[in-house]
Length: 83
Image (spheres, rainbow, N blue to C red):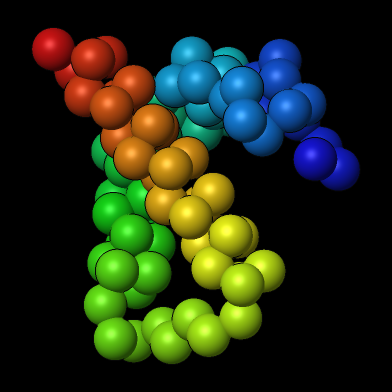
């Protein structure tokens, strides 16, 4: 990644805690971030997983798969935080 989220520069290792740290560093309210990040992940998944986005190229499919996995992972992490 060109920038970090929290303490993490590698997008495949970003956690919910990194988003919370980002909130602290930028002056955003943690409850806002805890709510908004999973909402955005859900919106991304809904576009990837519907006919709204036609993926016909193998590289685009690989990118969509990667984005899908990361969105699902971050949703799971935020669910654990709210439990």
